[in-house]
Length: 155
Picture 1 (tube, rainbow, N blue to C red):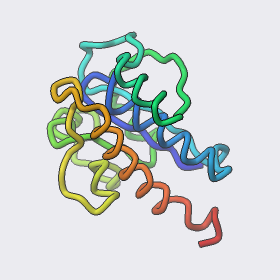
Picture 2: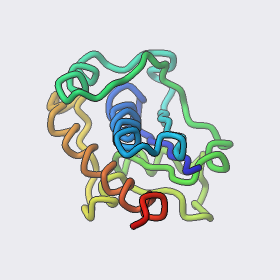
Picture 3: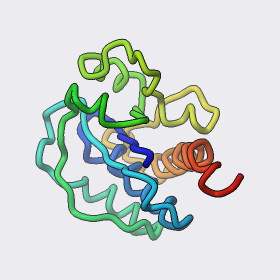
Picture 4: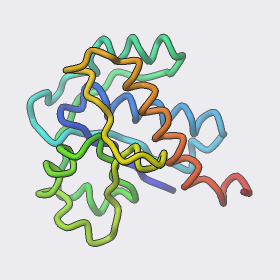
């Protein structure tokens, strides 16, 4: 079982989009029983809130299923519970430090690094461009799937 935790500032836009995009990708490959995929926030600003409606609307436009959820904040125990901890941008990486320390096991990465890009996913809360965020999230999640599913798919 491969466990992945997607992380952003509030856990209402980018990280839940990544959570549900990744769940959809593994489901389409028939690998849903081989993955545990969740998301969380580095802040407590949106605790308990569901995904932001424009993020849901973008997933609807792309045919990506999702469920109602409640934003939660990262905890120090998350480091031992997940194989991959994937941040959306460099600010998230900085804000994760109290929870992951110096990342002794090399679990922490930026989402777009899995797509060969050295940049963060722009926050649609500020840009308003949920389509661009979706495209970035999809590229990163496809990269993670390629990296993690080789043995399961016989590649």
